[in-house]
Length: 241
Image (cartoon, rainbow, N blue to C red; front, side, top):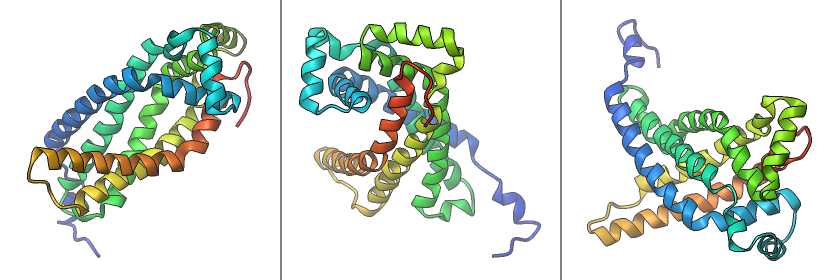
């Protein structure tokens, strides 16, 4: 398609007001949901990150962590998680809702397929996650090494500088993109394809089904990158990818 001189300015016209409103609304709901997720599922996240770091079985990791401090050991790094989790999820959902609203407000880009539009949202989310890497480093190191995690980080900063807090940032961005894109591509695709609900129960079941399918696809695709990210991020010394 060839654009005329009159059409080309329209290509770059976006409804920024609607975009910001959509992004803020989606981001806040995502952040609120993430607070509940952190509080209820953090033990599983701690076990998972311990497995990423040390390569044990789930049973081994669960027993080792419990022996290291009882139930509270599963919640090491909770403060950092309550900051990083909701803020990161705010960025994820705000990026998805905001970018989609931005593109739908454009005469030409609104007709792009959902999979193509989601690429831009995924890139924005990946960049945002890189900014939050230091908080994620504190959280993850405390999950894998308990109270000794802060000692490890202080030692690394002393030896290698403050940049050590960004170890794993590129793997974080890659894992976020690889995880974010399939999640929202699946979510947006199913949201468009499935019939709209008529009752509250149908709406909840529909959202739960879409979210479950999206999470299965996302976690399966991005898991290997998260192993690499965690191992580099929490290691006692500087190691390359």
